[in-house]
Amino acid sequence: MQGRVKTCGTVPIVSGRVALGTVGKGVAIKGLHRCGNRWCLECQSKIASHKATDVEHAMQWAITQGLIPVMYTLTGAHVTTAELDKADGNLHEAVQGVTVETVRKRMSKAWAVTRNGRRGSALKDKRIGMITAQEVTLDDFMFPGSRTGIHWHRHVLVLVKPLRGQSAQQAAHDYGMELFALWQSGCKKVDLKADSQAFDIKVATTLQEAVDLGKYVSKGESTPKETYVDTLHKEMTRADAKHAGKGRVSPEQLLRNIAYLKEHNNSKRMNQLVAQWKDLERGTKGVHWLQWSPGLRDLVGLGEDMTDEEIVHVDMQVDSPSVAVVTWDELKAHVDELRAVVRSAEDGTEWETLLLCLDSYGISYVLQPEHEWGQQVKQRLYSYGTKQR
Image (spheres, rainbow, N blue to C red):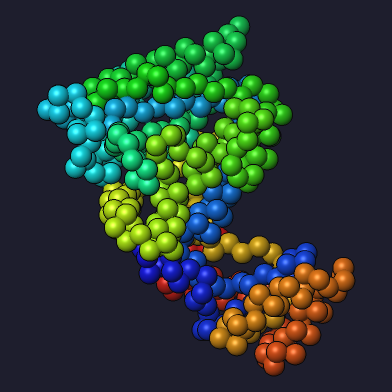
């Protein structure tokens, strides 16, 4: 993973060449390979934004169809009852040696039991579909204190079908009680205790609320003024943009902590955090962080879902009449300066300014229609085994 993330956005897809165009006051560089890794902050931001737009579309559709979008949060104990008993009830001791992979598999089995079986099938009749997001937080080793282990939880966004005369709150509550009862059974199957205190229900009831969810998704960290409706969309798609609870860290914060310790030459503490990160990376390999129930995407008019790698290779369309194809090795040392000059250009002269800059740097270029360049990129990605739509 480290090698892929390290080279993300630095390797051309098409024979050492990239294409330049202008988008407003910015410069678009098209044709660089992206890793699409969950832990690459640049890729994850683009992936989360794309998926948030899809979720927003589904929310809007649900409201117009008279459905009730409700988010339920499900989690459970960090260790099994047997592990806790063996440690005489000492959670700090019980969590020692429990890996991310172990916790993930237990929670996945509990969720499978929740969804399947006669009672799980009966609950399907009360919804049109659902979208499930998974998250994980870890002990914060930057500060001393008791350890509580690996916390894995799910946000389940359900499109509930209300009964005639039933209020949105009542429909959400009734469905939630049945869901949590099933979750308790699922957790019990793997010797975990479902966390009733962490079980949460959040409801969106109007079209405007649903629209607001989509608008908020790219705004970053939540503020005290935001309501649960404002932040629901981010809950589903922007795990990277949230704070963990006290004494806990998100995977993204763990990476920032490692970078901080490296900068301050605290190798002993850094090695502890690196070991924590490696366990996280192993334990989350292959996880689908956001999943749609079968048929829901088609129902809301979205069609087949794109893979993360497909998403990160979708380039923004340029405003310029064409693109300038250049050699990446000649360009890369001038990227920051080029962007600064174009940003300061008079309105309407950005494209001409970009070409003048290339001439002044002595960088040769070939003008090409954007769609032709896009086809070259698609063909090369296809030869690598990556589709682009």
